[in-house]
Length: 457
Image (cartoon, rainbow, N blue to C red; front, side, top):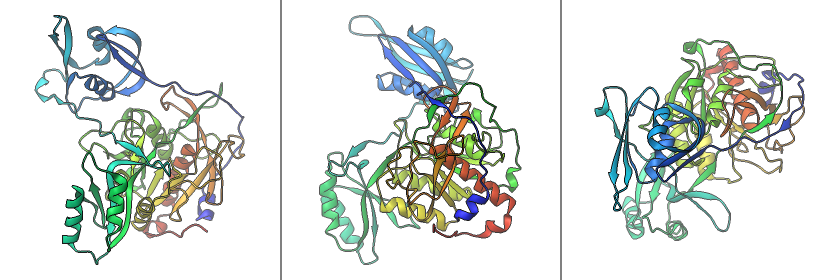
């Protein structure tokens, strides 16, 4: 596998850079005024702040433009004239107990189609807790479980009844179920109760993981790294990008083969932070990293696997992998990682590989030498990052689990929680390797029939 990857990677020399971090977006509502400092943020992200403030929001499901704004303490009525340009809107005001008008409802719709506006749904954000002993994070009141064939259905029902819990099937092929505890459930007690039962094959909290960051650098003048190549998507192998989502306007028409919001399946895909869009641009070949002399082009399958707070979980990832498989992805790009070693995460990676996917994951942006998962699993290709001069990037992780190093700097037209510019990270090198593998499969179709590739050696 290492030989195959190195065959399709080319390194060239470029200049060093100096660092500068990007700014966070600001959305604040106070005293019937709004402060908004955002760049290409989905409208739904802004409206959910109003919803959290107790204001009812109705929106046409097909309306979710990206908003760029920079103002402070602006009147809401005036602000919405700019926020929803191109769409109609209605603001409903009611008097409070002191007789002062207060905003009670926002309705946004396409001209003449107010009847299509429906209440805005919650974002599907995960509720996260931390294990006080290990520091691992997991989804509150969610447990994943696999059974042996020896356990009886009646016994399972008895345990669920004792805990006041319910159970749903997550993946039939893997035999993974999710146990949902009541709101006042005790995770550690529930795990202890279930572990005593015979016939349990695997049992864990639904472990959660944080999305990775790309780091913004000041570079000065540099050559454009935006590619202009095209690809026949009907004869190409797609890369499934499991990340923070996609800003569709940044990807040329036809290259986003399919998309899916794994946290809110009824929503059209969006990207509130930009990281997923950056990775889609790299994996598709529309942006190529500094240090690469070659250009490729691939269709991508964009999957929003991380919520607005930057969290995903094993359950969400399994659903995302299933979507990638059903849409015939051949490469899985995972530009993130965690020090938490999970049996269910490893099972998900093995499942993806067994279904014909090549899985590529980031080694991490903290040079500790510690294993990062899923990159360290045998079924996954682990990628570290190179600086533009072809040397190891000083912030890239390293270790025996790393399989390959690839260019990790790119000039991107969309920022990660900030402005466009030059960004760096093993995220970029991972998406680049994923894209190169898809391009290799396209050029060598005889390898496309191999549904299992050798493990790391």
